[in-house]
Image 1 (cartoon, rainbow, N blue to C red):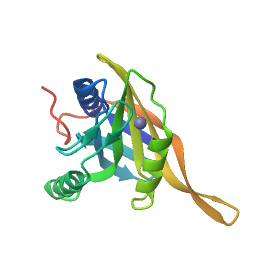
Image 2 (cartoon, protein in one colour):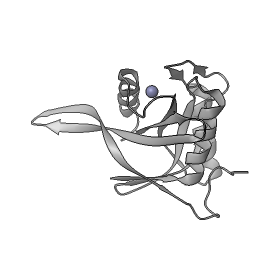
Image 3 (cartoon, rainbow, N blue to C red):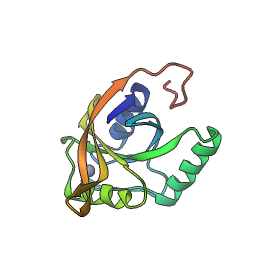
Image 4 (tube, rainbow, N blue to C red):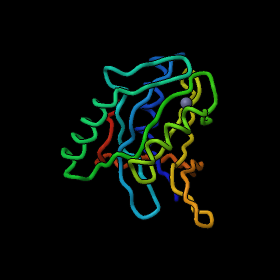
Length: 165
Ligand SMILES: [Zn+2]
């Protein structure tokens, strides 16, 4: 599986991250799944009731659910929820224990969700992402988080997504 990340979404996440640095910021990822590939074309921020701390971010869940539904309807069912993103200001794009637990909790409700982390400072941010999925070993099934290949691409102007001004 490959994850394709729109450069417009990457730019938006970086500016959200910088806005609240050194506190964490985050939100949700929207886009398409096709076969094994996932294409991230849009995003939402934290929502009005989100909590931001130095090493923790708790999104405004009910706002996010409403935004997912709104995006789905506005796009005629084109844009799906793909997973969550959040920032690690002045740090590295690695999953904390809390991040893994959050991803596996989402994976119980949504098939193969992503957790994307942007890390950095100033104007220099980089992203990595993980997928939560079911792994089978013998007769056991368990949820695991595995790193995914992430490629940033420039989307065509007519594609949906954040408008960069
Ligand atoms: Zn984290």
